Amino acid sequence: MSDNATLEYKGEKYDFPVIKGTEDELAIDIKTLRSLTTMTTLDPGYKNTGSCESAITFLDGEKGILRYRGYSIEELAEKADFLEVAYLLIFGELPNKEQLDAFHHDIIEESTVDEEMKKILDAFPKSAHPMGVLSSLTSALIAFNPTTVDVSSEKAMYYAIVRILAKFPILVAWTMRKKKGLPLDYGDDSLGYVENIHKMMFKRPNKEYKKNQIVIDALDKLLILHADHEQNCSTSTVRIVGSSHAGLFASLSAGISALWGPLHGGANQAVLEMLQAIEEDGGDTKKYMAKAKDKNDPFRLMGFGHRVYKNFDPRAKIIKKAADEVLGDLGIEDPILEIAKGLEKEALEDQYFVDRKLYPNVDFYSGIIYRALGIPTEMFTVMFALGRLPGWIAQWREMRLRNEPIGRPRQLYIGENSRPFVTVAKR
Image (cartoon, rainbow, N blue to C red):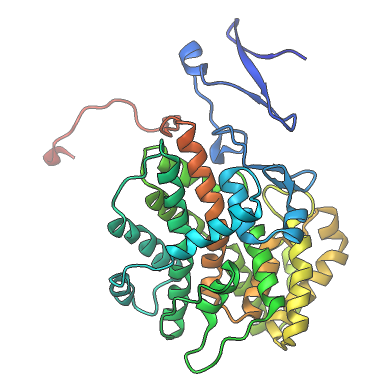
């Protein structure tokens, strides 16, 4: 195989290096394309364009493979906890017990936010969408932590990372508790990272907090499965904002806003809204499966198939089991969840969906679990952001340490040609 790819245009030939990744992926390096040819590429949605080299996550959509730093998502979900995975993504290796204990201890030491943050939260009406609140609160952290991170200092970088991992769950919990009209809670430093998140979110002021290990394990798995997913919309946003040397908190706030969209992190909310619409229409799943197969029907079956995975989403296989365990343990009777199980069964057995590999994805099952746990539908994307936090941090850190250039995509101009200005009286 040649180490170069050749572009031929109007009798001229141009050679560009072909680069091979560690998983034998091939990419054509076209960074000299414009200087050699005066041309650029056009790739709406960047479906065929690599924006960076990264050592964090490997994804093969055709084979249904997802690995963090070389470790399979299946093994991590089974054997690791979320804090271990966060450390792995950010620093490149799984921590030993001493490193993990120190990491958790340092997070605990930073697990408060300035009391004036409550005033900012109070300014939002209850009707405000939690993602808008979370993005604003994350951005507001900059005011209380105004010092720019010195990326050349390993210690400064470490404590900036610890600080956001400590404070972000508090903002998530406060966002939900405001939505529910509950007093704000700081949790309990004696608990594990994920268990403390659960307590901060769900502790009732008049009841003792009781741990449910099945629920904690399911939440832990959900956060692990959402922790990183290569160069998706929100991650690319974090990297491109950070490429301007914007700070970590500002870059994360931008990522939250990108995640908010229904085509990205908002997909699990869209799943539940679809299920609620089906219930309001009588709950006939067969009717809606038929609508989904009708090309002339505008109905879209949310939570099935995936833009990247052309086979079964490996995360969905893991979380389906957790969903079954949670629903079984909590003994919930919910018509919405019954509709979800009906759609799942029919999609897995219907040849139309099987042939097109339109299997339930992670958004389908995560929405089911979050509803079973009593998390409001509007909070689903906030939970996604909580899981994706270490991936965003890892990607921002990698980009800054590699000193990547500022992101500046090109365009193909299709507007008006040069024309003279006409005064308002003559228009």
